[in-house]
Length: 516
Ligand code: XUL
Image 1 (tube, rainbow, N blue to C red):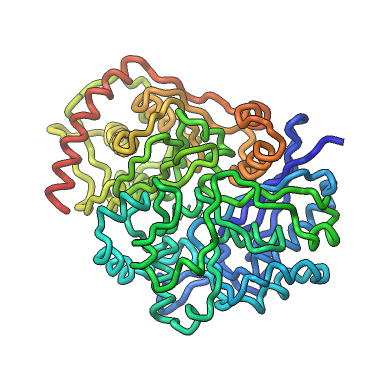
Image 2 (cartoon, rainbow, N blue to C red):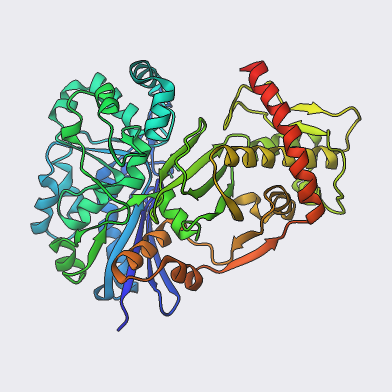
């Protein structure tokens, strides 16, 4: 019987497992949706928020534990669990789990079936876990910035001080709920909490995910004392140790062997963050490739062997080694929709915007910042049009899309990321025009995934197969990912854009300096 490798994605809305059999190219997948399958927690899209203060957003570690029982119950019906040699996985980044004592995990060894949540909840010092959608910590960010310095934080931690990051969230709780902070012996991330549940033991936190806390010295690979001091008193004793990327945490706990039939020698690789895991699951961890997700906001992430923090982007760890960058552009689909509304046109005009297009009009530029942009920081004054003639709807859309993609390319250049080919995902990845324009601006081939599944769960399974089965990631990518080529660069257009992006960069710079 061939071994299987399991990947688990503890995302915001659901818990998903993907089992891979690297030899036979098969993927089994099961999922627990928090809203639908665990309605007693009353979450919406996996989270709760405060009507009076919508910036406060949280979820329940107890619910994540309950979902893990439900997940294995479901998986056992589909997959021979006894064949699973190793488990890897990922959690939503930044969420913190607060425990009175790390004995919770040991107590699981003797717990009856279906009692993960009940066993763990008595050890929680705080029932709620603030999650990445929580932006209620502006005051705490400012306090930490005052203590350490804006630029210093960026250089040390790979990100500017950020509201949703765990450090600012910890400071808020330490200030406002001092009793709870004092009673807390361990603060886990979602990822290290899941690893600890699976091992029935208090476990380390993965370097790649810990980089999303504003507490790690990312270049040095360990907690940064100055950041810890500025965040909360006595924090070091409450944090787990940092483990190197793709470290085997240990063996699966007896709870899972007794109740679900796991082999006692099944290994657990320390869970990472969902973005680092997706980097692996999209086949982009070895470098040279980027992933662009065209959604409500557009997101670009890529492996990077350079440590080059810039404002508006984040440096996390890459499970395959070194770093990854993630940058989120607020002017994504929302801005495209706004433009369509203003022009009174449908998406089909967007799709055809580059049909029969021949490069022309080097100085015709649109700066596409309808909303305040975070990458780079630009205060929007509406879109800026630099053209001396009146434009048709198609021309406007073309220049707008060009502007969005020039902005992505410039940010990628500031991060010193080498980007060859690009995988596109998300709603607008179906648009041939977007794909072609990205291809021409980045001068690379554009792919989509034919068998797009949960890239973070798949990444977890691939990490398990790499760390515990010795199978190279490149081999796993070739077997498991079916990539379809959707655009190749047009030589003339690529050469034209190499010149035009410089003019765009100047105009963007003027905008940054004129209205920020
Ligand atoms: C990244 C971020 C989200 C979460 C949830 O910084 O906040 O992508 O990881 O997916």
